[in-house]
Length: 368
Image (cartoon, rainbow, N blue to C red; front, side):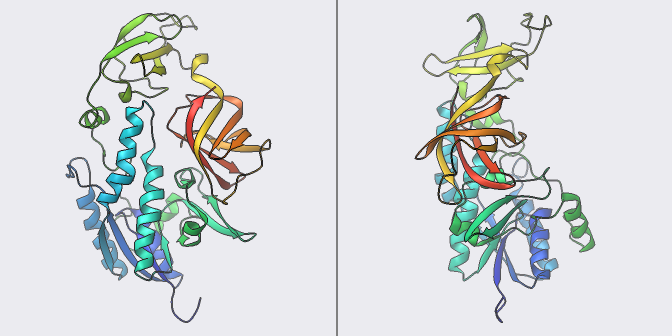
């Protein structure tokens, strides 16, 4: 570093991870300021969306660490770039992951642009991921704590964004982060991690979505023979692999194993407004070994070589699964897994890795 301390603006969420990220940067000699992003305003109340309490926690964290904090409203950008796409995807019958869009469009675009305008050298977040420079390019790395790794949500980052971002928690474990916070006297040391989508919070998902996408009743049929089993309120309320909330639990059909197995969503016919279900977690209709993905982005700026063995996560909580990129065509590609994967879901992201390096990914379009 030069004589002038490098200036880092940390995105403070009010949680323990971003608080410790700021503390670690201070200890490393950076000049650190905080920024709290207000991304959602519709029906923002304490019952479901805790942004008011989060802001109170951010102010307390900043005071404890002796740094300035700024509050910025990105609600308009969030609604336009993230929420509108979220609704379009659900209306089309797919299951999107808004956290991916929020990172690429808000935290590492709107926030980054704002920070650079303020003269910052870098931004930083409390994500469990890493970045490094290798052979003249920046790489996104999986976190040391594999149980908390969030590189899946960051696969759309580009070279410019990675070059301006610090991830202080890359080599930290969650238990260590909480211990650091406690030793520093940060009151959020034991604060519960936020779960789910910010603008939904803990509220019932179907009730929230129905306010924007009105119900459209249709038939629920068994995929194997087309037998009518019940009625659904709208295909957008259901996702591939879903077990609960189907309303057909009383159908005592005998599954392949001879028992009264649970029902799972296996497909949607958008044209006919039919929801198809199967019985049993291991029904073959729930497993596929090949998918096509669209909106592919590669962190290095160019595609990796096809027909080599990589690993991929077809959803956040998936294990890294060996796979081959069979074909790359511009922003689309075909991926074949070594073993069939359960409940591959259009709209979700598939993210590719080579060892611990995140290569990029895209949106699952079709399963084969």
